[in-house]
Length: 308
Length: 264
Image 1 (cartoon, helix red, strand yellow):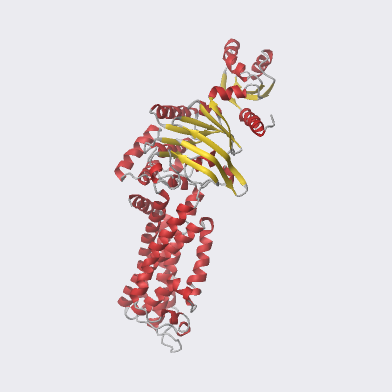
Image 2 (cartoon, chains in turn brown, purple):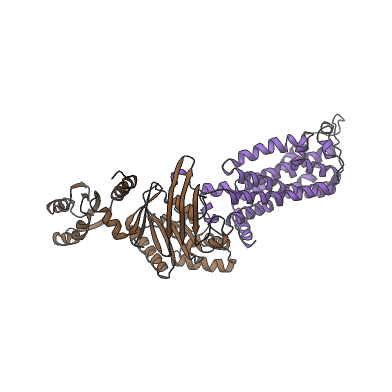
């Protein structure tokens, strides 16, 4: 489905993508990398907006540059917003479907269906300027899927969505994959990709550092410093519990949030629910700080350079 | 072509806003205001002018309508066609559609031309009676044809400039207008034949039965020569297809990603 051969993209003296070689068959893939790692450049190369400085890019066996036939089969939801403020979501998605080659009537029907799928029916005739960030994100997704493409490319699609929105969008994308369609999903948050697919591509510094399943990524993260933030009812009790169980190297308390540094994240994730149940502490939020992933990328970069 | 039609209709719908309509009125009102101002401040018949009142009004209307207002209207709409989408970061949604960039370019060009011509013609229709020039109908008919030729030609020129250098397009367009259309067109050299202005000038002389002002006879007059009007019309009609093809070629060859280095 995607074939990149020694692709390098330079912006003047800045390297966007560096000697990238990759072959992906049909399926769902997560492109994981920290901000500035080259994800957007890679997606711009795959969607034909950029021309590689070196190497070749093939999508479904064809060059993506100015390729009308390919664009009929491709859906793209970019990371940037770029919506028309004074236009309604319906008019905008309909307009883009007309550009896709549909008649006005078909484009209107496709826009309505896509906006319904992403839960935007009630607000779709309001101007986009009145939308929340999550609603704009859903609208962006609707324009990407309305023409029923075979291959969907999403750049940070969960950005700005609330938990309910994330859950709904996850369901939409899982159904999409269930239809046998292909997906490439770029994010800098591990669990976002994990909720959609188990196939990962790790990118940093414009290079493909590793690829594999979610288990492979977690296995790589074991032993690396890992920070987890927990918002709970009794932070001091939770902190002492974690230290008592020797699950944390250090703890930091700020308000109702405990930030735990651990070298055994797998053990912590596995045993935490039991500890919380027995102690009666209620955790309302838990998230892994990006630093843990960054640590993984830093280690992989060092391995890549032969420094580890 | 359906894609071009979609962009054309979308752009027209977008243009029906209060600020755009106000700009439409400014374009229509500008020649009326200037002609009205002159009409009520200058007294003709003193005998000291080199031009007759009829010639004076025709040259003034020519400078305002097919030239200044058409240029300004198309420059401000057409030149930022790509840069506006890039700055808004909406370019990406168009560029991943089949021939999306081309459709956007041509659709916006058509929308701009059809949007600019009406206010110029309205302004002309009010300004000519206001000037009280003799042969009003002949002047109106000549100027109307000139507006219908100048607007698409200028728009095509500005489209190329906006495609060649999207982020500095307006600067380039202003520089082009001042240097080529207002200075070089009067230079007796072959390069002036490439300007839209020179052909419009030749046509206004034929269609409105004018002589060149004395100060222009040595320069542009020699270039205009005795070519029949159809030659100038043909050249002006060739501007849009040739320049649109050039713009599309530049667009397809170039990289117009909104991605900056910070987005890497």
